[in-house]
Image (cartoon, rainbow, N blue to C red; front, top):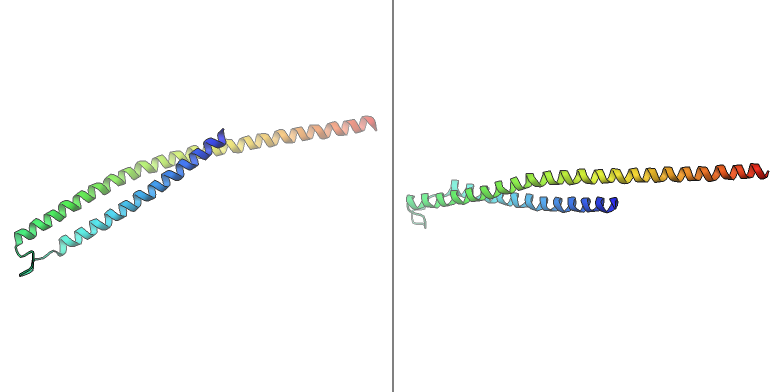
Length: 134
């Protein structure tokens, strides 16, 4: 039973670690998108006869990029808080798995001690029977 619980906690921990990797990948994608938007905001300019030829239109474009960047930052921050909670869950699952592992080791030690005691009793009985018959 303890071994099943230990395996369950290990598999849950592995699942959470995979989920953590997915979240970290998403955060890095958001970081890239935020950096791209920041570069676009800083490098947007007015062309003489281009699509953006008015400063008012340029400001509207930049403001749209800023709002998009804020939206991405809020999503990124949400994922980071989710990541913090996930880290706490992973630590808790690892603690539980270690506890079950410790219990398994203790059970094995006790079983080994019982086997040693039984073996010692069998050998002492053998010696006694040999002494009596000898």
